[in-house]
Image (cartoon, rainbow, N blue to C red; front, side, top):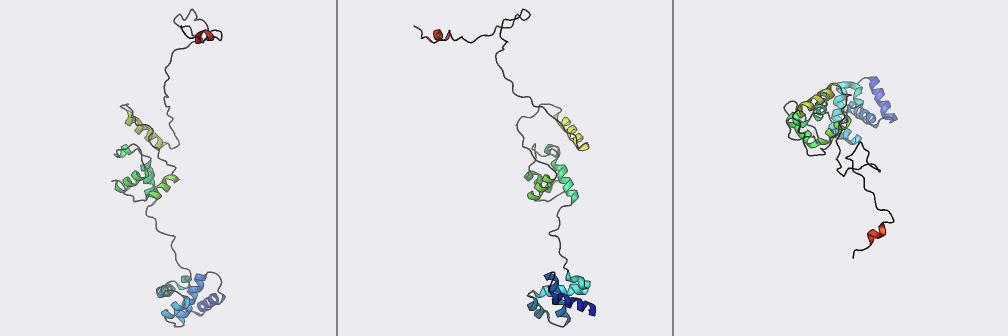
Length: 220
């Protein structure tokens, strides 16, 4: 260790300001340069002996840059961007197209398929899968009816819709639903039937107030 390095370490230890990790590591390096054994240094800084040895080895490798530890940013990623793209593409594909015996995905079914598919095996937890789908603005909707279409060209039309939506992401399809029919007697506007409509029945009128007492009298 040079004189300049020793002066710098001494300033860091005497001032005791800044990062406490740098002060602690500077103390370990100064004690080691003076010949203090590792066990005594560990008791001095209240650290483990392996920690003291790691600091000394880092000093020999990187110099005073060892004052700043190389801490990682957490657990390394288990899936990459290509896996995320594959997850989004699978979630937006009909399960029947991929040979699955159901009509819509769920988080559990999608995670199981990703672990066992033949194209690209992706092992991802359900919570991480929910986050990916939420970022991609994908939500699974349950089927509202058990009825299936009787159109023989249903699969061909669905494949065409998927092809268009993949090629043009900004396109959308609008489907109209036929509501329930109400069956009842035919009614006509008040008045007599016009000559042009001889088959139109004359509407019945409600009893007037003068006829109500006669209708309410009991039969003899």
